[in-house]
Image 1 (tube, rainbow, N blue to C red):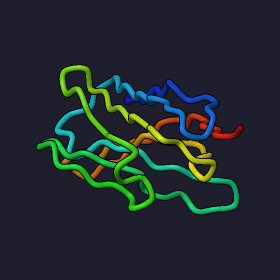
Image 2 (image 1 turned 120 degrees about the vertical axis):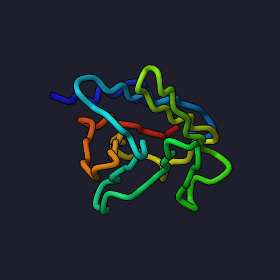
Image 3 (image 1 turned 120 degrees about the horizontal axis):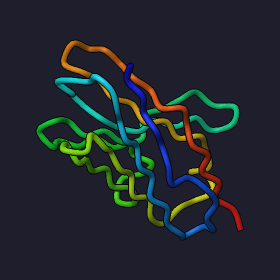
Length: 116
């Protein structure tokens, strides 16, 4: 059984930084992409950032230049470095893994709160 465990969420002040991690365990093979989505209060879940097995990245316009997604293939872990945080970044962040068979796995979510 595949399990995604997220860590690193919490509170930060505007302009601050947080780093999220998501480690996968279990029988997971041929990963196509890893990434992060978020759901803010009263809003739909949206893509934040993703990275393919080849290292290509994709970011939401709202986080470009502030967030950086990276991965450690050996550890099957994806990271999200979040800098220059804004109040509108407050959300529950979910990691997602998509396999080459287009099977999708989600983490349980971690809360990020940005406030002064």
